[in-house]
Image (cartoon, rainbow, N blue to C red; front, side, top):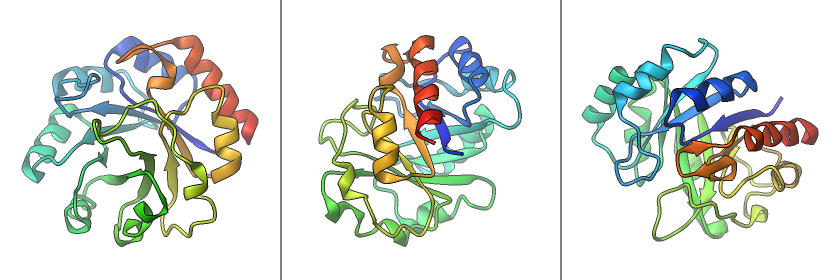
Length: 206
């Protein structure tokens, strides 16, 4: 079964509704320059309402290791996603207590050259944009990842929505998919019907 991650959660209502759709992971962005930034106290409050089976993913961009651990504990998250220029050594240092996702922003096949150097639990493939670290709503050329030999399971991200996710899955055959802007009314505010249609489209692709 393809795993589903809904990222950019900022409030309890959206989190509970997403959980009701039987998604696998919820993403909380701790990058202050993001339109979907949420503070650790709010995330802990949300986490208290979630079943233990849900992956609670904290998203960080080039943050100090000490700060990451502090926020992770304060927010009660159990997975870490690194979306910046973090090194393999930096990411591996967190595997003592967390599942680790390393994100790669792709514009061509060359962007995959260093992926397998990372001993993360999961790789996340996103769209490169010089002006944003993620959540761009833009799709990259999926053929970049087609038939590439990844050493770890991959999560496909970047501009996915209910209309294109079935085709994306059939092209890339990922372990999971990640959606944010594709199921939103506005940045950080999810649309329940879009979330529902997204989940239905993923299940159809299976």
